[in-house]
Length: 146
Image (cartoon, rainbow, N blue to C red; front, side, top):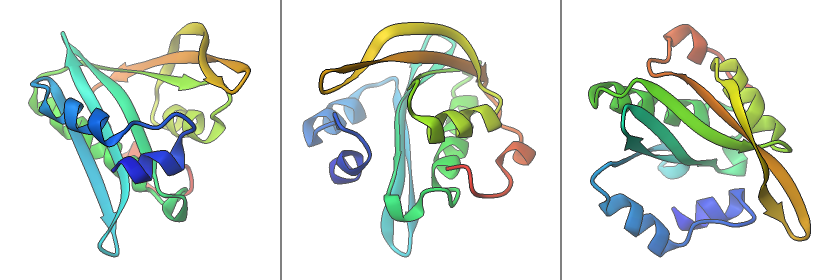
């Protein structure tokens, strides 16, 4: 998991980060495999009635082929089973592929965190997005957005 995350992010989670999150009572996650290999992963946590998406990553070889969307669908099922009401997440303003995916899944901007992300000396705003728990199957159809 840490290796996949490192291929996706400049500041990846370590193996210890994953182990720590997996032990939390309010944490939940999902993975998608393709051809017997880890293709995508996502982790979230329950915070009151919110499901907060902490991270989602997909292997470069499966991007734009529905793997991240499949992870979100599985996470959404778990959030529904837990009785959570709303998804909340942050996404870097310069992460166009992720922003496109979230927009197609009906996430809306509810705030901006100035300079939340950094890449070397550069600072990027983080958009805070939200949507109700309960992804409709029609919003998950097709490929090409993750």
